Amino acid sequence: MRRFTVRSFAIAGLLSCVLASRSSARRAPPRFYLGGAGGVQFLTGDVSGDVIDSRANGAADIAVGYQITPHWLTEFSYGFEGSYREDRRYIPLDQGENPSDAERAFQVQTNPLFVRTYFTRSSFREEYVKLQWSLALGWVQVSRLLRNPPGVPPLDTSQLLAAAEFGGAVLFVFSKNFSGFLGARYRVTERRGIVDQTHDMDSLSIVLGFRSFLPSPRDAAEPDPDDRPKH
Image 1 (cartoon, one colour):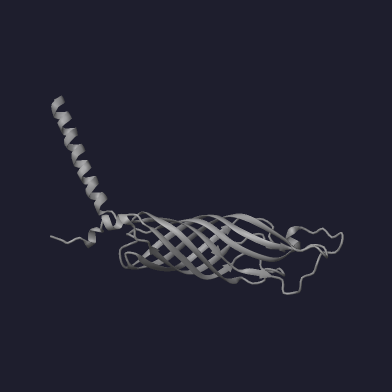
Image 2 (cartoon, one colour):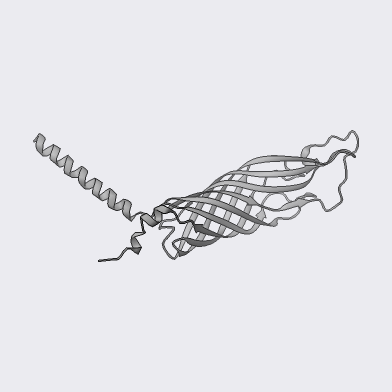
């Protein structure tokens, strides 16, 4: 009985190793990639002030990412968004005037920094059209110029607002190393006094992006199973 049990476990272990190795051989090798996206951003918060007085603005970001599995990607992105400034000329503070920073600000610019994760039910490297979903956590950097008394240059300050983002897109896989997507992203940020009556940088964006995978030595040593000759 003991011999039978040991032999059974040995055979089961050997089969498990064989199946795992075959599964690993079929798995697309992870790769680094470069990505980017751009589009139109619509602020959903208060835009009735003298500085932020419009909802729509341009937005773009660049990203460096890594394919964890055929279904999951992760990336770090840095973005460039709109710059807002008072239409009137710069007016220094009066002597003895001491308003809040939100009232002193006359120019605002935002830059998002995110760690973003993508998911699709089928492989990111298999053609052709499919849905992809994303979730991102990070910060929105708010750079502000604040008015000072006469003779003192404006003060350059920066805020980091904690932020989360959810997105969905249609993914177009043109080849194993290049794809594009068209979709939407909704962002929620921390509430804090920014400028005038604007206390957040929540937004909805429509974006068009691309993803270009970088070849690696592992790719050459371990070709994709789809490229191997079939017997």
